[in-house]
Length: 296
Image (tube, rainbow, N blue to C red; front, side, top):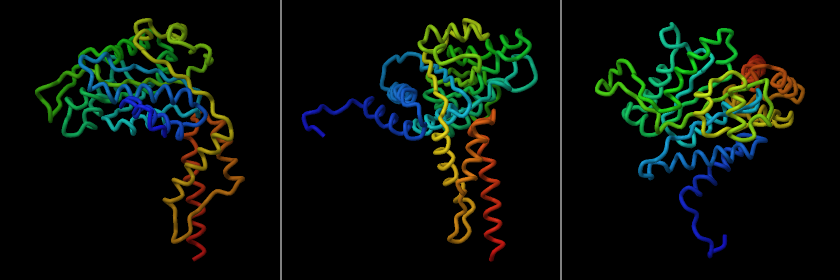
């Protein structure tokens, strides 16, 4: 390293570290992981800024099996902040039976531990998965109702949280300092529909989101579809991780090449994406471990 080079500011240290780690975990999407790394670096430093702006609201658009959920999971691990994931596809509107967004906020506060609501409010991550399925409901009015119920999350309005036993003095929660990720497939769109923020907002309105909802996002990130060889690499990584669970003595079960190809093809064809391969890997490795035991 050139001794005359100035030391990078703290933001630069974070960015380079996050960019490297995300790029290693999320294959074939260097531009996207660099963008997320920049967002994370800024979020890690926002506590040093007097009167910081609203924390980023990030929409990640990606085809199945491209790693959007995994990207957010890795981001949460890097920041080590209270985190809550919510499936937007099963959210109910205000006044209806079901799961509303306050359930996710209660989970976020629980993840904050002893710091409770105050720690969660100071810096946290909220992830809304399958956001595109909100507008794929047949009842358009109900779809809009759910969108409006999520606006306080995006705009950082005070949200009433009922009966927090361990923090009864503060029943309102603000997401002003919460980094919010939303993720969706949006199958009727293409990469060019998300080329810049203005185009992305118009795309959201075109597919059925209201302007108030679309206008709340500050960043738009598109993940490319993984190629077959990249999915194969992910399958091999997952196999290595899972195989340790089935180790018998010095023997660790492994997939043969034909089994690897079967799992890869399943990931490509399944509408559940790469996540669908985990159960298949467990099944194959369980059978191999059982066969090993039977030989003793």
